[in-house]
Image 1: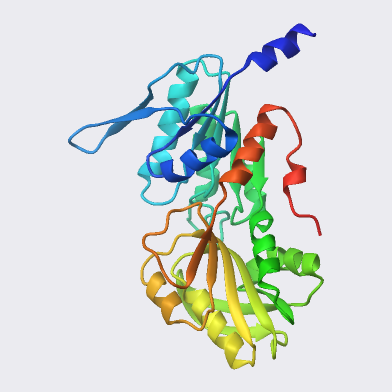
Image 2 (image 1 turned 30 degrees about the vertical axis):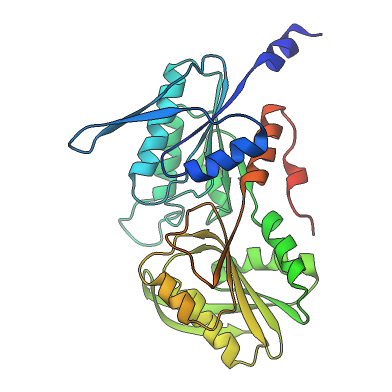
Length: 319
């Protein structure tokens, strides 16, 4: 056996979690077949904190799992864990970020604004990350902000089997805005059905001024697909307009359940039959209209392939 290959095979995988993603990291570690490593977070009375590993990571392939939703402490905890792993001589450090926060700040769309997703990419690289694994970025081109490899998982691998299980007649895919057209088109192509677009105009962030439906929805069972559901204003308004245009039913599939403000109330009061999300962000409370699908098995398979230097392409749904 080649000596380099022997050294590679001797590497040990260690999976760790940030504080708020432990619920998901435990499931990922269980699916992978490895115990979740222990991390302790020391906190000072002024709010500062310092996480550290309770075991050696020297020479190990370290996978740190943490979604970077609000508050910003979640992002900073990830950065500190990466820095700690680097200083502890980890061989390889992968940041597993199921929900990549600040992804909506991906371009300079008006003067004097920050590009938050580029800044976060720079921070992760500066901290010492070797690789990033995430799911359904708000804009896929954010991968280009990184100077390290990015494994971009696709929630369609989880959503498509669920849509199939519904056995809907007259299925129609809908994009809730122009930015989601590419995503919706991929679903429509897979199911060989048509798609419509909800064209919206915003007065300001999280506030819709106007919306119109481009396409025919009459008699159709409509499935809206998007990457994020935040205040649920767009979803509830789009669902209402789709039903007013004569649709038989409307469901929404959104990868990341940010669900801020009055989101839960809007969803429960809406005409949506169901909102299906992934568990990349923990739900704040249960809701009769919200179903969270597990992502642990997908991430565990991706970690196994990354460790073995195998392609992750077989994990994607092919049209």
